[in-house]
Amino acid sequence: MLYWALVFFIVAIVAGFFGFGGVASASAGIAQILFFIFLVLLVVSLIMHLVRGRRGSM
Image (tube, rainbow, N blue to C red; front, side, top):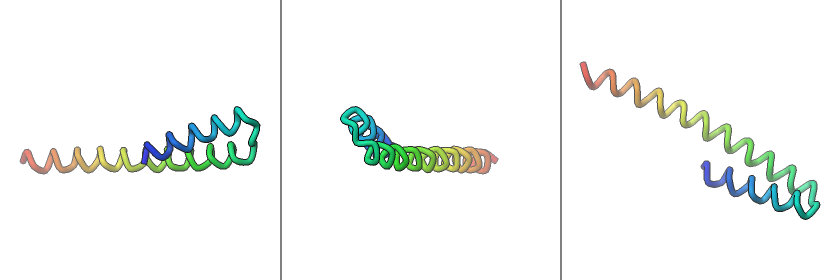
């Protein structure tokens, strides 16, 4: 998912460079949403890893 966030970020930069404001803002918005979803999934994954690690060592 981080890959898609980076793709939309690059599309937003290229579109902004060429002056397509609507496309740039839409792509930047999608990239931002995907990035935050990635961060939430990362935190959940880390928490699950810590919980499983503690339970397995008992």
